Amino acid sequence: MFQIIFNEISAAEISQLPTMAQLEVLAEFQVRPEDLEKLDGERFGQIEREGRKLYRYRAKDLRIYFEVTNGSVVVHRVLNKNTLQDFLFRTKLPFSEDEELSQSKTFWKLIEEGEKARRL
Image 1: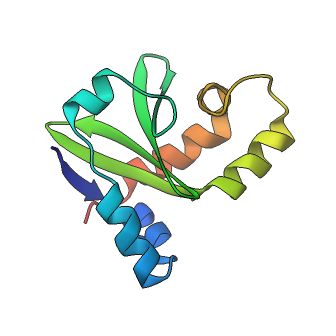
Image 2: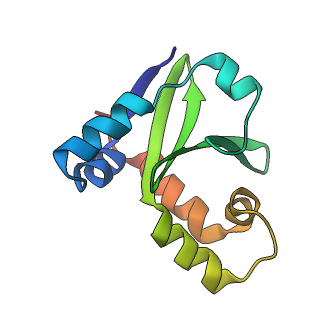
């Protein structure tokens, strides 16, 4: 299992949830190396762009976007699925959720904001 590190933005996003929902999501969000070797598409997904690889984890109505670096999971963003579905509907791209996001400059800007945020 990896150490999980949230940045200021992802920590603020998850803190928007009620306390019990936060605890449920955090208890569920466990990442092992074997999870990333065989992505099931349901819970874990992968988003790539220009050789860069991010992972997606689905936890109830949330999507947790993270990167694995130096043996740690660094969480860049925690987004509600309804926000993403609205975004995807407006972009009208004919791909799966992960494929659509990999093509979106706006999504990558969100991720870059998360990367630049201070880690907690």
